[in-house]
Amino acid sequence: MITNLAIYNYLTEEDITHGKTIVGTGTIDINGNVGEISGVKYKLQGAIKEKADIFLVPSGDNYNEAIETVKIG
Figure 1 (cartoon, helix red, strand yellow):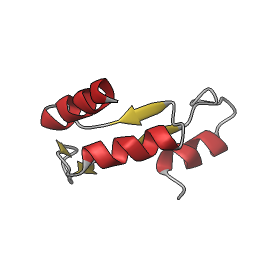
Figure 2: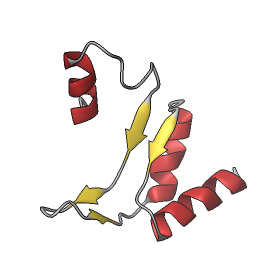
Figure 3: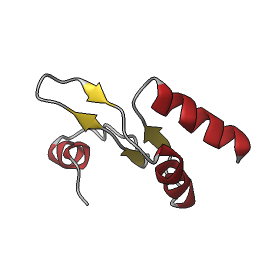
Figure 4: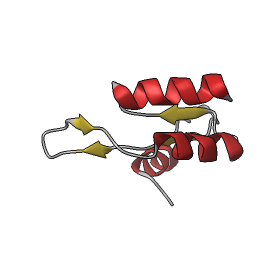
């Protein structure tokens, strides 16, 4: 799946990702508010399996769940 970040990176001269694989999950409403999502643990495990360099996740409970998932391994 091509994301807005990938499209922007393709259209600019500078590699804004610096060659890193960046993945993320979440929702953004019409006002730009980031909402919480479900299944962070499983999405993070998939990102790790695919060797992603950076995983973007909403703050709050989603962030805490991601941190705990990484600690547990």
